Image (cartoon, rainbow, N blue to C red; front, side, top):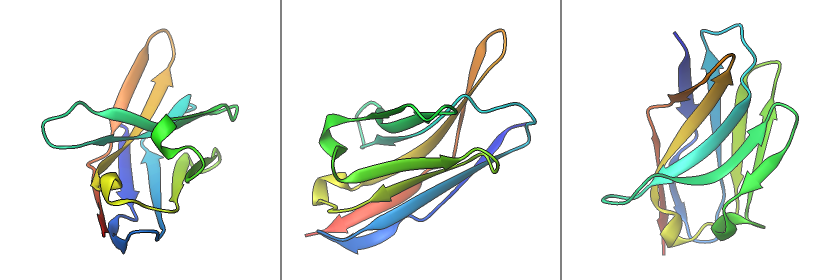
Length: 118
């Protein structure tokens, strides 16, 4: 059973920084894509950033230039460095791992709260 364990959320002032980490365990398979999503109450979960095992990266327009995603394939761990945080970044962030063989399966972390005070 694949499990994702997140850490690094918390409270920060506007303009500050936080670093999220997410480690995937329970699989010997390569994790094809790892990423971070966020979801505000009453809204759909949206992509923040994703990175493939080959290093291809995708960012939401709202975080480009402020957030940086990276991963350590040897540890199946993904990181999200969040700089210049804004109050509107205040939501729950979820780690995602996509593993593909014949079909693809998505796995989710439990979510970590990020709160940015103005």
